[in-house]
Image (cartoon, rainbow, N blue to C red; front, side):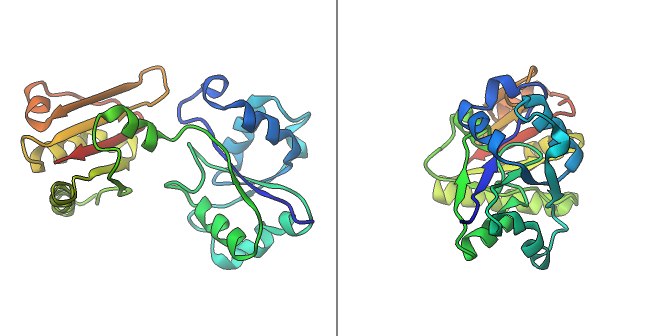
Length: 234
């Protein structure tokens, strides 16, 4: 009998596992001994913090990241073929959402392995919930281009699409670029466009605020280097 592929959510803010990881995950994890993760060290730290396995050393954790190729998957997914359950642990939040875990999930579907998504925190969905923007029509766009000219062009394209479709546009950025992205948005968005900044979601310094671009410009803000989600609706 084949094993199941479990998609295991992790924390999106430090030291919040006792608050955001639900009982369902904690009930299933003790039976899973094989894992795929972007970073073995952080996966071990997370699993160890839950105190659900007698020994973290007994677990097998292999790397599944953006460098993983399709040809690597048969070996990585081998526990499923031998009857063992396999868990994908994201570096932050939910596997398969802005995360390379989707590669393994696609393989599992192609080879008729059961895929079981487990409930947990997603900064993208939590930010959308708290934004007050359109939750019926929305698009996640990953990262903006780093080049300033390309970023400006992309922001303007997304704003036109937002206006035509009444669609909330969502994207993320590495923490050290929060202020650069924020300034790009203020420079390129229409004054009446509503912009949400969701910073350190579920963490101690959680901040979620929605204002028009005009209102944001009145009081300039220097954002800290913390995980952020950016959303806007034209």
